[in-house]
Structure formats: structure tokens, C-alpha cells
Image (cartoon, rainbow, N blue to C red; front, side, top):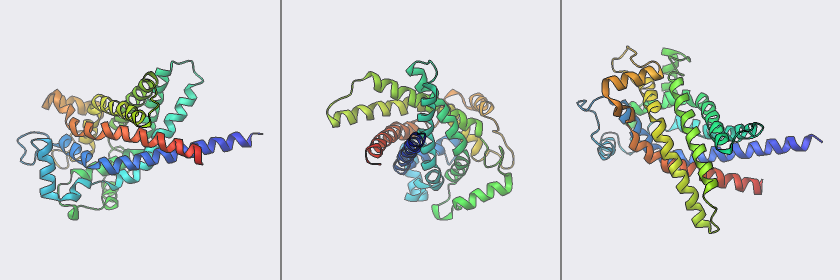
Length: 299
């Protein structure tokens, strides 16, 4: 008697994992160049730096001229390797936390937000080592051909600094904050607003309804969580003085950036981040929902 529910649970989990992984892979392949630009803005410290970018357009021009087309895809292998399991974890754990919270007397609005927070914290633990490698590779301004390989750079980090919070897992608290806050707002806003705005019978208008809500979800979540993102980039990226660690912990890094560079420095890279995670967030949700729906019907 108990075999059927177990098979159903395994099938449901498999469908959520496959749909979530597919959503992540599509999003990263479309949006990675904007992630490179965002990271570059976040790690530059002052306008007097001769390597600093003057604007978003200037950054695209300089990267293309100095590093070529493949410069926009630096550090893409870590997110590709991480994005499939990362987004699989993101959507699967969200669904499971949501199901668990169904046993507690919470409002639907709060359930979506808390399930999103839980999924973000879980996702951060899985993805942080990949983020350390990705940020290091994205900060490298050499041409693509001169850049170390992903595995070679990961081995360098492990050899010099180990696996811990000063090595392949540095910046973990900032990553927890970034993903926890983002997913809490992202899922909370999307599902609550989607439940308020009526479903449209026209497939095209229904697609646009979901895309618009997803776009707003990704944009609002990006604006709220970007100080954690800046702190993460500073901790995981190259330090101002080689051999001297200036940025160590999440909130101390935020305080240092604020004191030395002002409040706007905590929002560096916001425009490319929104350009990526606004439409990217919508793409992920739509790919997940349509893939999950297709798998439920055909698997």
C-alpha cells in the first residue's frame, strides 16, 4: 500500500529537479555576459582607477576591445556546472519547504516568503564554492586565452587557502544573505501577485502575465539584495593590496564600503544585475513552470 505514494514522491521530486535544472541552464546561457559586467563594476573601487568603467556601454566596449567576445563568457563554466544543480535545488527545496509549511497555520503570503528564504539558504550552501571560482575568473582582465582554466584556478585556491571559509568557501555568510533575501522576495512576490491577478484564457496574454510578474519579482529582489552581492564580490574577489585581506565578513565589508565609498557603492552593478535578473528571473520561472507542467503530463 505504501509503495505507490513513494513512487509518486520520487517522480514528483525528479520532475521538480529536472525542471529547475533546465530553467537554470537556459537562464545562465542567455544572461552570463551581464553577470561578468556586474562583477567588474562591483570590484572596481574608485573612478580614478585607469581600469575603471565609466558607464555600462563603456564596460561592454572595453571588454570587447581588450578581451574579445569570449571575455563576456569568462567564468561561465562554474555557473554552468553549478547552475543546473543550483536551480534544481532552488525550485525543488522551495516546493518541499512550501509543502512542509502547509502543516503550519501560516497565511499563503508568509508561506511563499519563508519557503523562498529556506530555498535560498540551501541553494547558497551548494553554490558558494562555484561562486568563489567564478568571481575570481571574472575579475581577471587578461584575454580569454591567457586566463587559467576553471579547474586550474580552483586547484590554486585549494592549494593556497584550502577548502574552508578563507578558501573555497570564503564569503559564505554574504552568499547566504544574497540568496536567502533574493529567494524570499522573488518567490514571495511572484506567487502572491500571480494569485491576485486573474488568469488569462488567451495563451499569449497568459504568458505575458507570468513574464511581467516574473520580471518584477527578479527586479525587486535584485534591488533589495544587492548590498549582500557587493559584499560577496569584495570578499571573494581580489583584495586591494595583494597578500593583505581587507574584506573578511559580510556586514563588516558592507560597513567598510559604506564608510570609504558611500551608500551608492553598496549598489554598484545594480543596472547590469537588474538587466540580468529581471528578465532572467522571468525566464527561470517560466521555463520551470512550463517544463514542470510538461513533465507532469508526459512523464
